[in-house]
Image (cartoon, rainbow, N blue to C red; front, side, top):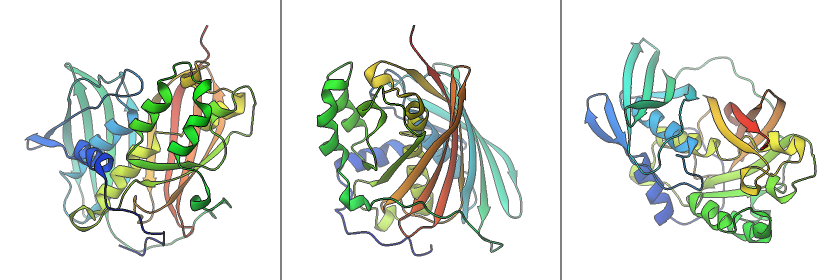
Length: 305
C-alpha cells in the first residue's frame, strides 16, 4: 500500500471501534451466504452505512486475493430492522482477468432490504490526474463531536438524541469544519458541508487490511452526505423534526489507497433537490491531498405536513 500520509498518533482500537469491527465480521452460513448482526440505531431502522459496509464485506469475501473494490452501486429497498440479523447472499457475476463483479442481496424477515453491485480490480498502472483538495482547517484544531454536541442539545426534538448520536458514532472521530445543519436551522447556507473523520483508534497488525479500510469508509460515507441538501434550505434534519429523510441509492468509487484510521476530509455538496428527493455528491481526500474516494447519494428529503 502507498504511503497513507501523516497524522498525530492515537490510541489502539478502543472498545467502540472493536464493536464496529465485530459488526463487520460476518458469519459465513454457506459458501456465498453470510449473516450479519444489527445494532440498535438512533432511529428505528438499520443505519444505511452499516448494511452497505456489511454487503461489501460479503462481496469481498468471495473475491480472488489481491483484488480490491474500485466501485459499488447500491439501492436501499426497505427499512432494516435493527433487532434482527441480516442475511447477505452473494452472486458471483464474473471473474475476469482484471476485474471481478459481485452482486449482493440483503434479506430480513424473508424480504430484500438492500441490493449492491460491486466491482473489484487487480492493481495496474495507468493515466493519472485528480481534482485539487479544497482548503480547510486542520482537523486537530476542530472540536470532537462529543465536545460539540452538548452545545446544541436544546435544539433536538428529543433530548435523548444527542447522546444516542454520540453512541452511534462512537467508533468514529468526526469533526465538522462548520456548524452542522441542526445547529443553524432556519439559516439557508451554501449547500456544502465538510467533515474530517477517522476511526477512533488505530488499526494495526492483523487489522491492517486495505479491504477493511474501504469497508469502514463505506460505513462512514452515509453519516453526513445529505447534510448539504439540508443546508441549502435552512433545515436542521430529522433530529430537530423539520425533515423526514432516508437514503435511496448510494454509489462509491475508490481511486487511491487510504487508511480509515488516518484523517480523511469528506467534502460534500448538493447540486439539486426536487420531488421529495435530494442529491448529494462527496469527495474523500487523504490529509496529504490525494483524492481517495468519490461518493454520490440520492435520498428522500420531505418536509413533514
